[in-house]
Image (cartoon, rainbow, N blue to C red; front, side):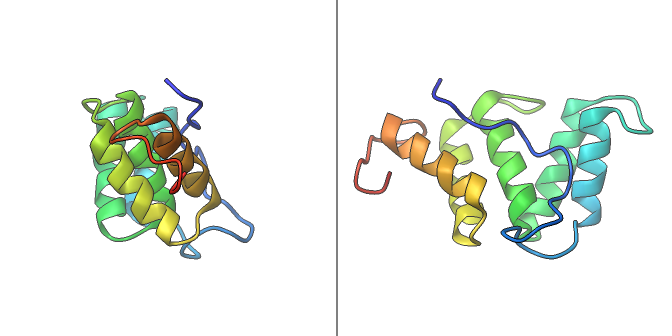
Length: 117
């Protein structure tokens, strides 16, 4: 697979992050993903990132996309990963923009598209 980033493990504190505060679902997702105060459980983490992503939080959308792209805690689905990256990238989240370009350039989750890459 092409060089895709790892899921974000903490909420970005500086500029470039969509939405100023992490949603509760994203916080729970990070806790389950890292085993922070709870037993590590990637499936539960994916579920909580899904909740936050559906609420429109760009960093959670990015985390969910990377999980779909790599199959971490949820079934691998590159087309769905591309959809979530598009949503996060449209909010101006740079890691999502980069990874979306990688997916377009390599035809991951859809046909190769060097123009969009």
